[in-house]
Length: 243
Image 1 (tube, rainbow, N blue to C red):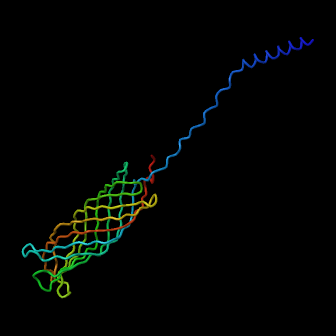
Image 2 (image 1 turned 135 degrees about the horizontal axis):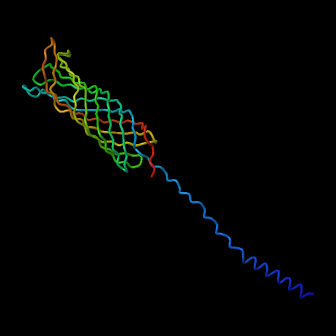
């Protein structure tokens, strides 16, 4: 009897081993899903912008007569306040742009006209502006740039005798300008800047109208130096660029 029981147990064990051998191995676990980490965005200067600025300007007015010669010169100086609008496009570290700006100016100066005792030449520059192209190099949220293009100024002239106006003139003249500046973005849309511009308007012949409708001319040369600080708000374009 004992032999029979042992034989049955041996048969059962062999049957279980054979069944286990027929079971296929378990498949390997599926790899964990791969998530590419998001790269942080970088700042871009691309977009339209609008801003305000203020500062000061100084320059020189040279007066002369085509027949008599030099009539003397004087410096003009004063404050400015205005605004600008423009567009930037950034490609890599290079920034290309265009800008139009205009400002009220309170620049004044005068001198005694050479050879005419008692006559005083006075100048008031009440508006200045420019239309320029800009080329800059960007380091993140900092932008160093140069600019150049056309400039304009509106001038008023007065020749006085003992403080009384004897002849007046006014003109808007065009010239050229070059400059450089540094701009820093302190938020995705707002930036602050400081800038220097040199403006040269050459020498123009100005017609004066005097007492009784009498007219006369003078050749007047002008250049200006402008230092200003301001801020810009960028809109209508991407605030960031992806890597």
